Length: 317
Image (cartoon, rainbow, N blue to C red; front, side, top):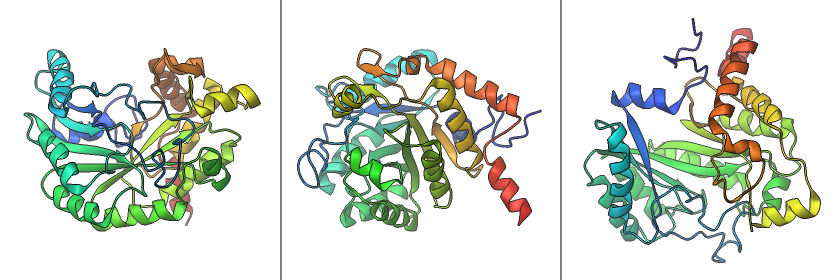
């Protein structure tokens, strides 16, 4: 019998699918959208060139067609999903680049167009902690009272040297302050981190998760670093040939991270999902379901589950 209470399957961690099924009593999909936003780390507001791993689409490879309006994007993707799950509900996922980086009247126009679509129960908005204005915070608080809202904040790592290398251009203090501001308004926060960033050790990656476990966050996305063609990271990799995690190393680190996370934190993602045509390394990332299965098998072999080290520490106190 599975020891982990936030699971009705073989999973030993708190999956997004489990969370949605228990909250909304049915199948829920996130519909990825590309609203054509820019980024303050690209246009010179705080930096130029963006983060060194970022693709031209700004993580929008699997979103809607940027040449279509936002409603068309939504309905194109929704109609494909309806064929398999005709009774599904939907969350509009503003994914590509920085999705609060615009005047609030523009944000309202885009967000509320999606909220009017049939079957939509909420929004998930990916952004940076330095790109949410006070006016935007007030609007998000208002929006959170009307629908199911999640703000996804990019952190990637707590290591200062790493964030300088990858050109994040915001401080850890900035990130932490924005988490606090959002939680003051009862807005759910999901944090993105990346394993395998250049020159980071296993300890560095575990330290990032230990830090997050002490914050009031509701979810986490764990990515493996994807080296994509024609990015500054691609150039650095070819010049320096820094170590890229093997699949076995990645699985070991992820399991150790899960053990350190409170069991109620929802795991929204546990590996990367790069475009195979753009991927330079690691090539093992292409087999996403093999990675997921191997994580499950290894957790069973170790007889471990999410939060086990948190629970052990609590029991010893």
